[in-house]
Length: 73
Image 1: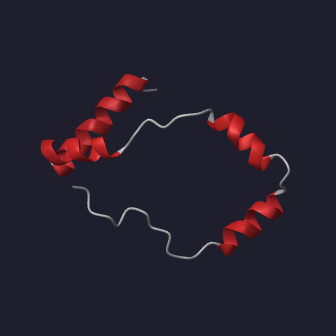
Image 2 (image 1 turned 45 degrees about the vertical axis):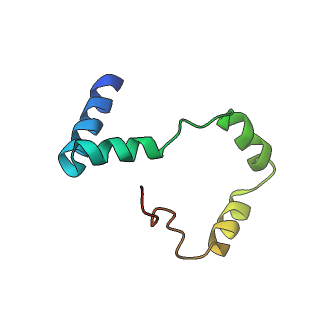
């Protein structure tokens, strides 16, 4: 089993090999670590829903929800 450090290094290496150094940096700068407590917030909106409710909401989503089409500048 790989350590967290090994996985992170392998991920960076894959990005650099695929994108090059400059575009890897641009890619990483695009993301932020976020804020809040996801587990606590998830319970606030999910605890009162059944699996059937979640599946029904997923089916209502539009087919094309790709949020990554924008150009990273």
